[in-house]
Image 1 (cartoon, helix red, strand yellow):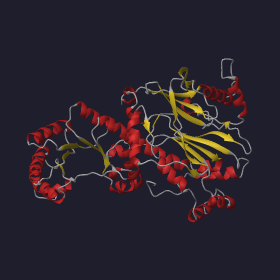
Image 2: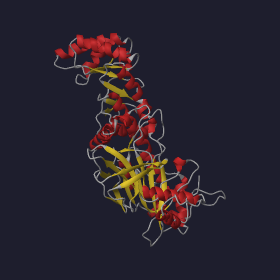
Image 3: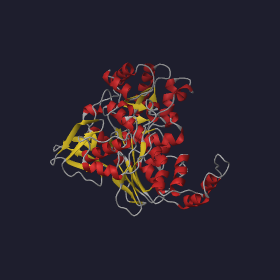
Image 4: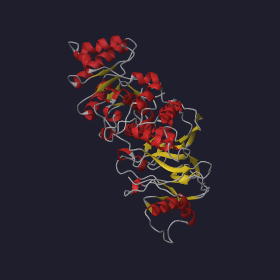
Length: 511
């Protein structure tokens, strides 16, 4: 189910539609294409990302169509000469089009790294172009928030992390996406009741300062709240004086205990969280309320949580809002969707395509890419290799670091591997069984936990090994040399790569 209400095919950039019309009116109308979606750098300066958003992609593709109102709107758009921008034949095609392509994707919750295809889309080129913006929109933000949540969970070292960023999220759609993605990344619950209903996420919450301020005394407010919700009493104690608030909460906790009920927790939302939480813990324990949890909030993120942990804060539950739901320190993942191969009508062979740039990181990967994750005999991760699915490297393979071709890694027969991209749509037919949100969350947590601690660390994380299969690297190099009009030397790419590059008669233009 889509997180937001804007699920129609018209949720796209104008140039996707203008290109689609141009494709259909050119000799590329029957050409098939391969695009792949990836990102160039790990978010938040970290060592990994957690893939999220596939379920929303599935819902979008499953319902992909242009309705009558959308066609009417497009028919009214004009070009620079005042004439209709879109031709009647193209609009008629839009009115009938459905997604008939194929999509392979990393399941949600998979840990991923830069330059790996998270999704691979193949099919008629105009159709694959039309879905670009919507796919990026659904994967970019969700992956960003899921990754942020995973980092907060790591910082909390096993303590529950509550997401409550709805009020600061970028609109209702952003709030729903953030709540779901945060749960995928490892949060235990959300304050977003709509997300709880729609996605089955556990909901949690306390009360606001306004509740306390509405009464003549804090103690009276606490007692009234306990009377109203005796089975859900967590008290916000910092409206006036935090430690006085803890004392008043203790009185209520002792009163609840006499009734056979219990105070669940006290929440601190301001001040020196390390010192106040330790003092609150001491006071609660002295009163015999050892099972009452200390909840902390107040502009938390993974860095502040880690710092408070280092300071010995006695916090049991962490409430993370604004900086999680808005991905505060990096508002965009920077995901891209690039053409990597075409197949002409009546032909079986895919012709590689490459985009060349003055920036090395923007040079794309050609071919029809897949991703293999290798493991050592003891089950630990050895690295990820991007390869062309039509040129299987076999059990022994060498991968090359595209940023430094002198750095190479060889995988041996005693290492196992798994292909990370799985079929989702095959020629328009959904073949993927959506997993439960709980199992997606479990996948994400397990995937992060199996990373080496040096990859998980926040400061200067170790770079997880990802590279191109040697033959694919040679092809990429040959295509770059060809695009730049440089004759390869004898020490350059293999003869097979040069031959394949020669067959690729055009390249995407430079930006």
